[in-house]
Amino acid sequence: WLERIRDAAFSLERKSEVGIIVCSALKKKYRDLIRDGNESVKFLFLEGSFDLVLERMKRRKGHYMKTEMLKSQFDTLEVPGADEPDVIHIDIDGSFDEVVERCINALKPLI
Image 1 (cartoon, rainbow, N blue to C red):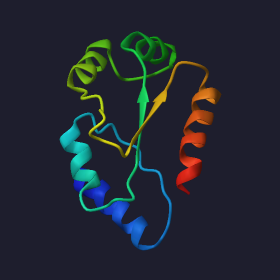
Image 2 (tube, rainbow, N blue to C red; image 1 turned 120 degrees about the horizontal axis):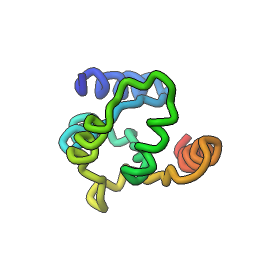
Image 3 (cartoon, helix red, strand yellow; image 1 turned 135 degrees about the horizontal axis):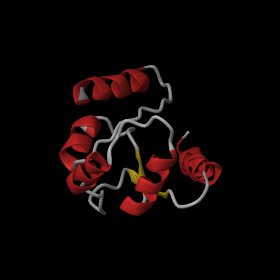
């Protein structure tokens, strides 16, 4: 599935189109596979604490993810560091609208 994401990013680049592809890409090796050979790929890393994400998850009606699954994802997560300059960190503390605004502001210079 990561190869399909990478291929979709390449397809957008070839057509000089901008797109947003959403996936977890929890590990650096996953992000490396997506970015391989495509310098136009940028990542938005939505950064928040386990407790914040858990609180929001519990407020969602009908959400399938259990606390154990979220813990497993946080355990697996490799937070992007300085060696991944194509990653833009977005603090998710705040309202939905505030987080969306942060994402838009981070992307504006790129398009």
